[in-house]
Length: 489
Image (cartoon, rainbow, N blue to C red; front, side):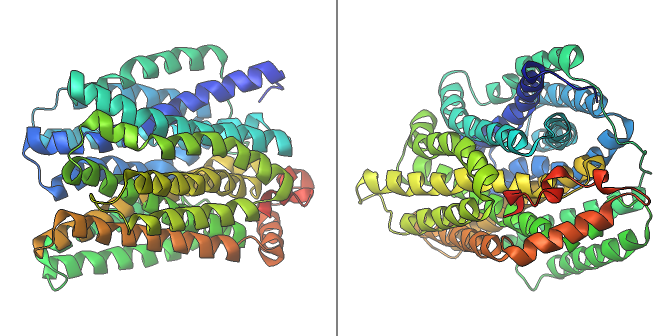
């Protein structure tokens, strides 16, 4: 990649962040529209889960393939292809005649989305090579997550209240088209020095592992844990995961390089991403239903109620990025996990008869946690890897995020449905869902503390050396590792 001026580098960052914006909007906008989807399409709660999870399931399944494809065929080319597919799929979602077609078109969106964020993050990490500048860039990247969260509920509520839920997909089209044009004009092409082989067997095992796991979780409330179908799906998922690990360990150029997980910081970042995003997705799912069903709010007012959380995330994400650059990941990880946990525990005290201020306090505290935790996850994942494998490393972490999102919606939605099916009131079902979210947040805190100490940093340095190409010198190791960067801290 040619050496770019600072102005050009930040222009590339802005273009890449556009993909993050539309992918982030897609999650938060649709959450606010769930009750409207339920009424318009006659959907059950499990149908709502599939409307969300069809997208994130395909996204999670293909992220590693897309990341390695970008490294092999060219990151700009892959990014542009993803934008085209995402725009087309958004248009199809906007005209879906029923829930089945909406789920199918959402899956197609996932195909396009899988080529956006991990590849864009790989472009960013290859453009910003200096440690502190990279940390600041990733802080901006995290702030865009906050922007999408802040805009999503308000924009979604406004669109649903005025022109209908189909417009939540139409808004992706002009943003996506603009990103396609700007990418062609300003983003330089880059790829790994040596092309990686395609791994169709590994890709199939990833899809099989995730699809069977999510399907079983969503169907448990209806079929029960003793159902032969549920048990069979869980067994297939476990066997597929074990087979994937054994198979990938023997490949010279695997889809999932299990050597990444020799780094305690990388493994920790993966687990934190799964738990934190499971908590976040479950939080949005339950609160959307609570605000509109229990409190009787309109979609727009429900979006306004979520605004304190979103604004805090937007403000704190770049702060967390700067903290990671100066002090390492541990402070941000601890504040993040603790904030998400305490915010959700506060929600357990909420009911329609309590002051609404308690709800806003809970949302704000949760937002502090989520705003702090995203930057250290990203920085840890990409800083400890050779630059030549930045796309694959970023894709593994992005896969962890989307897997967490998918599992969070499936588990929390299933707990919510099971409580309703057992005769509980809507409020009792919401409280059950919130306690699941609190458990996920607590695990994120534990993994954050465990993976950010001196021992973890040492394991990251050893893993980075083992991942360097045969015969390569220290230059193949990430600058953050060579300098003993606190980015791993």
